[in-house]
Length: 225
Image (cartoon, rainbow, N blue to C red; front, side, top):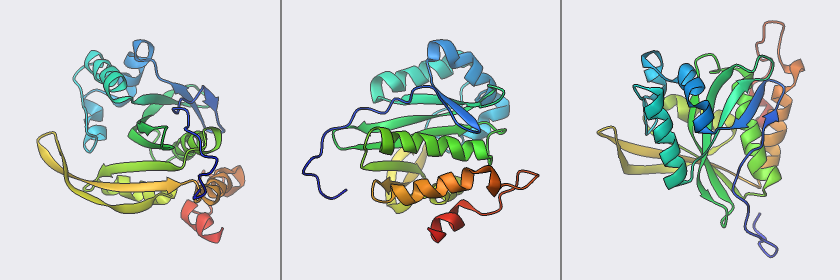
């Protein structure tokens, strides 16, 4: 949206409980949800989920909850968690961060999918619904995705979801004692309608075979539009 004649500052993102076809999304209240979340994305068996995340892993649910609450209070992270839409099983979380409602810009980050959620329709739907809230409900202009440039899977995910690569901030951070070059991606409000249509077409049951395999990829659908 280049014409800003009627531009007004946005509200901060804060998605109310929402049920999609595959996933349900709820605001995370760490005084209530810490232990349950830690059970599915914490503990030694899940340390690899945090390899390229700027924080974690933690040895206990208490330390995990304290850290997430601190980032909420000090950095403005607004965290939501994901459940299976049918069974209500907890599956992971993500946060709106670097929130700049006066600029109509926010970032999706600290995306931690349990191993059960990874590479599923529910995972894609979760990312679609969080983006949809930002653009359709709140009228944001920009939606960001950032990751460690060494995190190839995160970069592939960003491109698959429709984000555009913008560049690399070299020597951007020191994370866990190591240099981090940060790769930046974004979706703008002008790009969102086509990306949204592709998400909705991909998520239709008709796009999946009897075994749950996709018939058409998200990238192919988006290219066709």
